[in-house]
Length: 347
Image 1 (tube, one colour):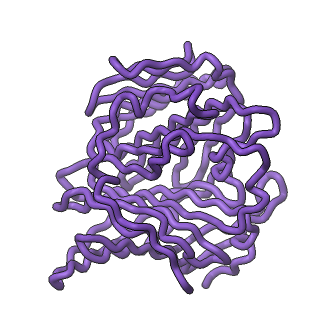
Image 2 (spheres, one colour; image 1 turned 45 degrees about the vertical axis):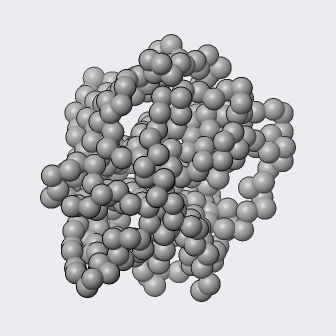
Image 3 (cartoon, helix red, strand yellow; image 1 turned 120 degrees about the horizontal axis):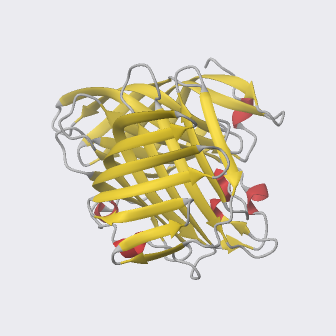
């Protein structure tokens, strides 16, 4: 199938994420999102964890650009995680109108709900769900950045791949975990209509955490847009492969090898990836990997969800060299087209 590839820009992995990029942009934008993701090495227990605070200040009838990930015109907070057998999703709407922040020194907060503070490379980010006896604290040591979008007030989206220590509390239980962390801030505008009704595509986003490396932030991430189950746009990707420096890559190509169908709590049918292949091309060479889902899907995103996976990958360098690694990962995928649900599995 014909594919469109976005240009590779070295600045996607060299432009420093400064404090002013992390402070709230309101009123220049109509929404801000703070996201924290953690992926934990193999073995029993929690495989991945994600938390977010989404502050919406949209006008009546407006739809934020973040609607592609299921966000609407209402502020909310989420803490979700998965083991190999179970998924926990804790989410509720919150009053985020009191979100305030300053860049120097960095401190972004809502009393008793959210706190982000620190100075590069060390940051602390805390989420507390009111009335649910649940909270999570992330201690990040930032390693390298990925800029997914730099379109000013229209859409600005940065992520920092980091080592992370996590304290997750639910009721009387506390879990202390270490792994790969991704600390993200995204903000943008809204449109005066529900543009999601016009979207004919689906998307797939993978984050890969390499095992057996001396650099805890060695990782890769890629995003693609698809149509009828095939990759149409290799949107953006980047990697710090073990033993290599961070590099922008040429976007992600995804091919589903095995899928299954699942019905959501709303009665909608979605496709769930079981096995898939990914491919990134860049200056280091061609990096390909085979992934297998290791957790149930968290049905959070319209037409899709979030799940954990294991992978085996290989880098074929321009000079003919071959390097192989494995690891664990986290994926998000969504579908407004309704085409993914029709993909039969296995394929």
